[in-house]
Amino acid sequence: MKKIVTALVVAMGVGFTTLSFFTPLQAQLLGIVTFLVVMWTNNALPLGVVSLLPILLFPAFGITDLNHVTPNYAKSIIFLFVGGFMLAIAMQKTDLHLQISHRLMRIFPNTARGIVYAMAIVSALLSSILSNTTITLMLMPIGLFITENPRLKVRILLAIAYGASIGGILTPIGTPPNLLLLGYLEEIGLKAPTFTEWMGMTSPVVVTMLVLMPFLLSYGMEEESVGQMRESVGPMTKKQKKLLWIIGGLSLLLLMNTPIRPWYPGLGLNEKGLLLGAGLLLFMPGVDLLDWEDSRAIPYEIIFLFGAGFSIAQAFGSTHLAEAIAQKLAFVRELPLWMTLAVIALAISFSTEITSNTALTSIALPVMAELYGVDHPETLLVLMVTTVAASYAFMLPIATPPNAIVMSSRVIHVKTMAAVGFFIDLVGVAIVSLTAYLLWRWVL
Image 1 (tube, rainbow, N blue to C red):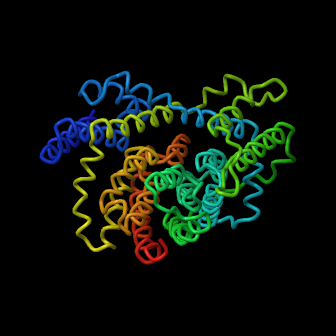
Image 2 (cartoon, rainbow, N blue to C red):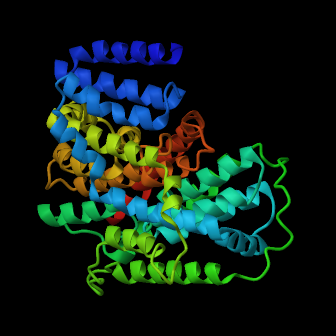
Image 3 (cartoon, rainbow, N blue to C red):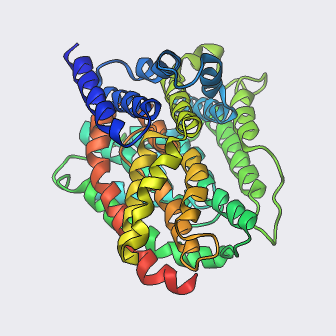
């Protein structure tokens, strides 16, 4: 009860403090969001319970009505996760993740730092061409098996999630905010970077983050025991081979479905349908890798968590809080450019912690374009920083799909992710803003 009271006191403080800056409705929304974030952080109530509270609180305080809140808990992207979770459950049920992890350990050093670096790099590279959501779902069972050391297991899972977010910005197709930027640039008539130009610009950020992030995650873990892997898992079983073929076919389909414009249009298939279809295939006669009873292992609290994130994003738009916050940022135009970029990166990165990075990007791009005006030479630079910073949120599970997915493992506490992610957030902001000032402004 004490934790709930603490959340209420902090939320009321934020609500009253922001009354002088925003409308009463907007201040109420900020107070409610603060209440949810504190409750997620201090584990006052189960994660799923807190994530369902917007259904009650938003209508009760006049933020938005019930019929507009509840559809956020059944958006199409949620079924992508359902399919992905089914694949992850099948990997654990068939012990395929044991086979894969043994083969990985033959390549990378069997030390705490070596494993953290290995999982972060593998996750980042795969996420640059495939969905970071899919990659995190596929790597998480491996991360859970590699060691029995609970502290190291947490760091490995965080390395997978953070690596997926870091690698997602390497290519224009790596993560939804990148595609949103390309679409917005086309809409306002600005020339977007080509595929190779984009990679040339973002690779310094990705490489630097992949050097620093695993180092910070593994700091102080050098003496930790990795634990003994099983000596042998034997040859692959028929079910393991069957699942490997399904995952391989899915990966190939996802790769072929990815457009590389202007050279390749992609297959035009819906990625959400592909993931859900692959998950349902596991139940089919002749495949028989899952029974319906296995679906009880799906972490439904994470699905509710995403619903809460979508609801918050919708509320930020419907109450015009997003535009009001952008107006408060108008002062950044008077700052030196390097400081402007740092403030924007910081604001976007920490704003993303409480809402979907895709939703925030779609709101923030038109707002940020108005800081200097669409025709200003610095506008493309500002939009690029906004987009990349939206993917670099590491504190809360609601911030990005990879964060939420590793939280579903139930071995990471929100408090742990927030504490570790805060420092990596700051590192990301510094690297993105410095790279933009020292490199991007000369090539855009």
